[in-house]
Length: 548
Image 1: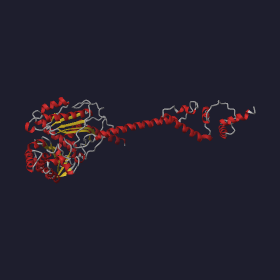
Image 2: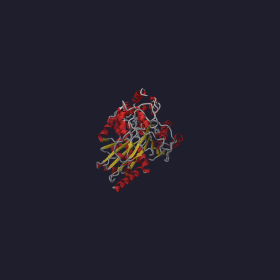
Image 3: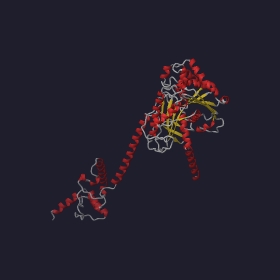
Image 4: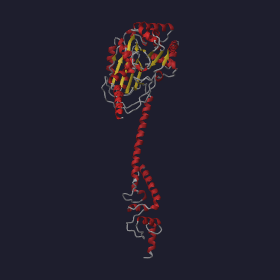
């Protein structure tokens, strides 16, 4: 027995259970109030390290080995994370060390770390989705057409924003025109680059659309109402020259109708893709003057599904005011607003001497008089020629347009108002935007710089003379004119010069906006989108005052 005693004590000392050779064990026993053992352990023997044996027995960790035990636990947790990442067995099994740890021996911090890891993974996933969505939106914004932010009360320039592509979820179809979902087509970006609305949480806001089929252009604008106006979502513009030959033949030609129908089909696809719920689609002078205009409207509805409305000249003048009213000077007593179109030109006198602070769309109530001239850039260029224009031909164009101004009502009263010096001109047409682009020396047309630009009377005269003296080839090469407008721009300058000679104003403001913006403004005002939000804001302010 004595021979076996020392060897047994040595084995227990090696296992870490004996009192001798293990001061940490004795200190632990003394601290816990347990008597030191001499090698006889009443508990069942457990193979493995000391920490595992103590955890099985439910005893606290030894004080002298706290640092090493915590390090082991940290290493174990690290090994567990590595195994999970590689699809290995969970760390609680501890199979790699060959120990059979009982239930409850795994540290509680592993569970907490696992939950935190799951939350972090979810956050990373959300960030990846947001990043991919942002990349798609940025690519779409680079390939799109021009858009603007128009406010019925602000006079600042528009701001551009990226595209919002989440439109197909809007299924409310309660407007004048309803469209199924379809494919998205790119617009004509010949004159301006693309800008779109910023993605926001207001995905339930309805979309409005305005289409203007004029004598020269087919234009579409899709927008969403905002607090102080609307944000353009998509835009489209194409020169179709629908009124080509109407002045002489009184008929729309087959080639012109084909060009217009092709452009309208593109507009239909955009309307369908965006899920527009409210729209107004108008046609102007070409369809008014042509004898087969009504037949063309029926053909458009049969082939494209779009129901066009042929508006009269008075409506056209009012819509031009509604679209450009936000650019009226706040201190002006009057405005001469003109819209030089392809087949007609509208001139409106806004008498603002008693407007009492009215701004934006409210200025349509102050239309004192208006006139629509049966001359535009297309029919005037056809009568006099637009490619090689001599000074004599240019003067003949001016006289042709000036003959129609004598029928303008209240012309003398307007002259008296201009004499006060607080009346300015406001022009919306391709003619004035071209003059502004040339004046600014743009290497590429940029509507953000053109829209809202002020031109002095001397600047306008200088730009008209510069374009008149410019040969046709130079007009084609000019980035603000191009081949599509090179034979029409001088006819527009002649109409503008006739207006300036009849009523001379010291300043002219340029508007790269018009009928489409006026249509959108009227539709949204009729639906009360701004009055509702204004009343809501007032109610919120009232609640805040009541709380205080």
